[in-house]
Length: 276
Image 1 (cartoon, rainbow, N blue to C red):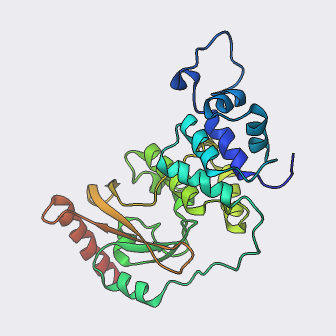
Image 2 (image 1 turned 120 degrees about the vertical axis):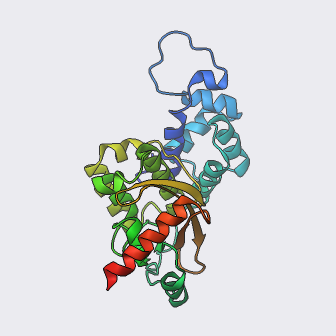
Image 3 (image 1 turned 180 degrees about the horizontal axis):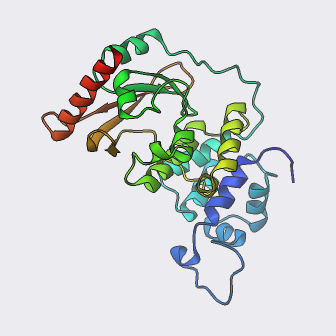
């Protein structure tokens, strides 16, 4: 077995442990000593040899075909996003050239847009570090300001966590989105630093990270319990910024004419007052 990082094998093993035999029609006879499916069960259902599947998990075969991976994905009941992630791990598991430092400067056009858009907006990078934010975004959450990290805040800051009535779901979604954002670059120094810090500081992070859930970086409806205006439901859009190595522009908005729009206007006026 190789001592090199093996993200493909780690992902297969984690997802295999989450699929119980009854989900794939395997009868349970006697006491099972493993969580989820056995390796040989996955191999049988995917139509590959048990030895070949073992080599995949152990990192001794890092060039599986897309057809094999898609068969395994069906057995592991992965959705489209998770299957795409699996295929990306395989293509990125070969040796890569030394990467250039990732760009951390927000394009001037995006910075100008944030300052003039009139809606809560901020920029995060692929590690969910906040690189830029306007006053209204900071009025939504004091943690939405440059220098903060969305993962660290949700898992280590009680005040930030209290913003989310469904905090467990918010944490799960954030981790799944982070894994999708980083992809196969698990040897990246910033990734190692952040995951290491949170794994030591948060048992909840460790548990959720071990599941290897993969989410989608897309818009959603977010409900917050804001300390100044109470329940606040907003639309959140995440828009990729081209040629920036994974930066996303995040914009919040409310349904026009709704109580949420009135609350957002109140927060906007408060943020203007605070800046004077």
